[in-house]
Image (cartoon, rainbow, N blue to C red; front, side, top):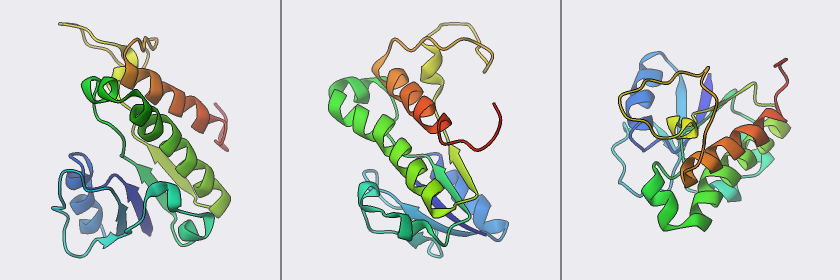
Length: 154
């Protein structure tokens, strides 16, 4: 199975991708490499901005995994426009073209920031979202945009 991982050079992708390779998946990564590239040599690198990808670029993938975006609230608050672009628009755009390309599965890794900030309290997915922080708001927006493209029953 061929998989495209957006943001695959980040802290989650750099852990996930070796495990995918161990299981025999063919993995390509599209990433801006802000924090370098420590990916295994047998990972394909797609040297394009995510917004430059077209439907035809995804035709050969069976799965797309979105791990990209700004990773925390301070980064999101530092640049609200980049927060919106990378955390809301980018995953929605990639999901849209993946669906148009016939990609069988699109996986979006959101963030616990959609549940707000707490101290000494554990949240799970049954907790209502309370996204008062910039990063949480855009991640929730991205989730809603992608739900409209879902083929499965809610």
